[in-house]
Image (cartoon, rainbow, N blue to C red; front, side, top):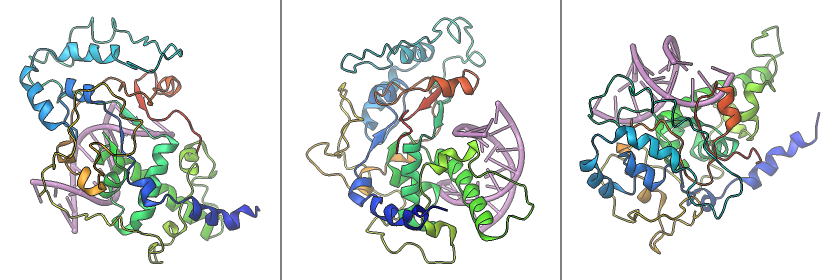
Length: 308
DNA sequence: CCAACAATAT
DNA sequence: TATATTGTTG
């Protein structure tokens, strides 16, 4: 119907992120402060956190409240009045009981983190990662590694991948054979697919038979089976600075260039930790509307802009 | 044991 | 519904 259809992937090819584009992009969903406060181990600040662990005890409840207040700490005078109408006096504060009277044992570990919201940007990185990995290697762990989004867990990716695969299958189905009466999905443009539609789907995704895009697979050959072996080379320890992390993608942390594999591999410990609060990283905004849609739940949103 | 995947839960 | 969590399997 559209001629664009014929060359959409020509353009797609051009728009393919070069490794340089993809690699150094290390975003973070968790600020150092937040990580520390919650006893979260990110790949960078291991040691710092360890120290904090000792002093972490009865503060759990306080921690939570602190988080909410710390939102958007410094944004060069943000006139956006990002006031947290967070019911600091409603949810847990006054109920007094969080869960079931946790006596004061490792609280942070028990708490849950906010639902990840897959913005088009995030999904884009996801698709790019999958595209560059090829179907075979496109498994949650490797995808997660390539995406290099700090705070993103393997399960986040796994869950998303599961749904994405269903989406691909649906597309295959209706592009291949007559529409039949299936009536299963119906509209491809259903609201459910909007996210996925926001990023072009690499052609070979639909053709498992065809060998992967060996076309462009520059280097990013993630050693998927790389077992833990290397301790963080202490490449860059996050100092308790109140700097903005989200802006500097250069990955020039100490004047040293970070390799993707060398840099993000201490994520083994990143498992369940909790933080039922928003994450104060500037650049990340919580989408009130999404939250509303969810029934007033708090949701962490990355990149409110749906623009590609 | 860990990770992927599918199924189920919220 | 979208994402999380759990269960099962390799």
